Every structure is written in C-alpha cells, then in structure tokens.
Length: 412
Image 1 (spheres, rainbow, N blue to C red):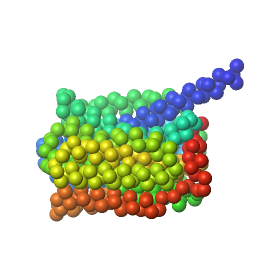
Image 2: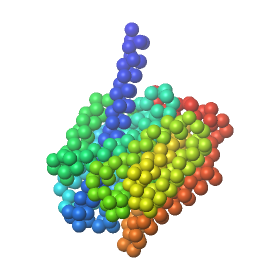
Image 3: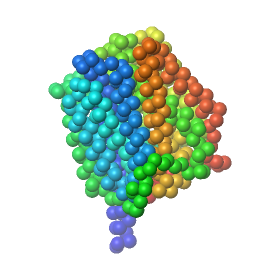
Image 4: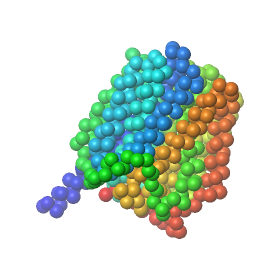
C-alpha cells in the first residue's frame, strides 16, 4: 500500500510547491508593476520629473541586480522555502513604504526594496518552479519560470490602473491588495515541501559570482542580445511610456496606461509555447523578427498619434519577446543540475536588469536634452541591433538539439 500512496502524495506535494512558487513569482512581479499607472499621478500631484521617474526604474533595477549578485545562490544553501518567504517579505515592505509617496526619496526607497525582493525571487522562486514542475509537458518548467514575471507585470499594471481609475483610495488601494496577496502566497510557501536540501556555506555564497555551465556558454552572446533588448524595452515602458501616452497619444487615464504596459508584457506568455515547437535557433530568430516588427509599429504609431496602433504594436512585440526569451532560457537550462539552476537564473536576470539599468539611466539623463520621440527611436535602434545579432549568430545547443528540445528541462 505504501508503495502506491507515497509517490502519489509526493506528487501532490510537488504540485502544491509548483503552484505556490508560480503564484508567488507572479504576485511579486505584479506588486512591482503596481506603481507604474501611478507615475503620471506622481508627476502631476507631486511634481516628479521624467528624469525622476526613470531614476525610480533604475533604482528598482539596481536593487534587483544587487540581490542577484549577492543572494543568487542563497536558496541552494538555505532552501527554496526560506528564501521564497524572504522574497515575499521584502516586496511587502516595499508596498508598505509606497503607501505614502509624496517625495521622490520615498518612491526610490520603496522601489529599491521591491527590486531586492524581485531579484531574490528571480533566482529562488524560479529555481523552486523548475524543481517542482511536472515532467510533461517538457516546456512547462522553462515557460513557467520565464513567463510568470511577464504575467505578473501585466496583472499588476492592469489591476493597478483599474483601482486607481475606479476604486477608493486611488494612491493606496493597490498596495493594500498587494500586501494581502503577498501574505496569502507566504502561507502557500510555508505549507509546501522543500525541494533543495540545505547545505553549509550560505555566508561563503554571498560574494558576487554568477555561473553558466560550460556546455551552455556559447549560447550567451545571442541570449544577451535578446535579454538586453527585450528587458530594456520593458524598462522603457515603465520609465517613458507614461509620459508618451499623456503627451503624445493624448490619454491621461491610469487604466489606459496599465493596459498599454500589459499589452507588451502579457502576450509574452502566448509567445512562449510557440517557441517550444521550434528549434532554439529558429525560435530565437522568429521571436526577434516579430519583436522588431512590433517596434516598427510603435514608431509609426507615435508618428501618427494612433493609440490603437501603439497597443497593437505592443502586443506584437510582446509575442516576439516571449518566443525569444523563453527559447534562450530553455537552451541555458538544458540538462542543468539542481545546483546549477539558481546561478543560471541569477546570470540571466543579472544580464536582463544590468542592460535595462544602463540604457534607462542613460536615457533618463538624455531626456533633459532630447525629446521623448528621439529617445524612443534610440530604443528602437537597440531592437534592430539585437535582431541582427540574433539573425546572424543564433545556433542550436548542439547537433540534434531539435530532437532534444522535446526532452524535459526540469521537474520531478
């Protein structure tokens, strides 16, 4: 009897862990997107400048990179559950701080705490997802790990926009909702099983170090081009699209702003399964071509002042980034050991956020001398360069990768 029931119970507990990890990752990123529809409110009511808003995006990204560099391997030593709970705690503290934003310093401090929490989530919770994911379908682990952030950002932006537009306490209610969801996720993590055996050396793991297995390093150049271009675009949507929507597309609605942001983030989830049906190289090329097509549409929309076209182009770009990002991560995770997963995700997200920080910080400084249209063209140029690199240099993991793309990337 035990030989039958014990594996069944273990499977159920792992499914609970998978649900808890995915839910927590989604909620952390949803909370991190909650301030975005409020950026124009902060600009109008508190006098925050475009440079100040872009600095808030940079501060968030700096916190994320710092957590990835210092805490990226911590879950291998302390376990997925304790680090997952710490992640939720940091994001919750950020939400508490943002309940009273009237000075740029408060916004920066809240975004820094959120960045630290999301950075820890990007290694610990994503590793928890891969550890506990079912073996079939084979693409589920990489898609859930790579696209849960996009789903969370979309939910957070739309939910925040709706509550700011229609709910009471427009500057506070979204953060109260986030706090409640974070506490619920903490309960789910607390009752879920641990998937990583705690090992000594937690303090020794803190000095910054990222690691990608030697067999996957040849995939990093193209992966870096994809990660930097797509995540810099996401940072562009946070830092500059609020002003673009208000100043050039004539909409001041926080709900519209949330919908526009989610129009880029949400379709990424739809693009991911498409990439799972193609070889790694083909999927990355296709994804970046679609991503570039979306950027072309964005530039045309700003030229013509067409908000529907801007939203449509954002959707196209989002689908393209979903195909490209999930395929790049799938290649890096292929045949990875359990101990490799947190460092791999730390490396991936460090590239993501470092690229976004550098580009948005530079764009924020340039916003004092360049127009928003010129800055937008610059980000479109980055998309063009990344697409060209991918088209010329993308290649398979190794001979026969197409056949192995259907093998599991993680799970039980």
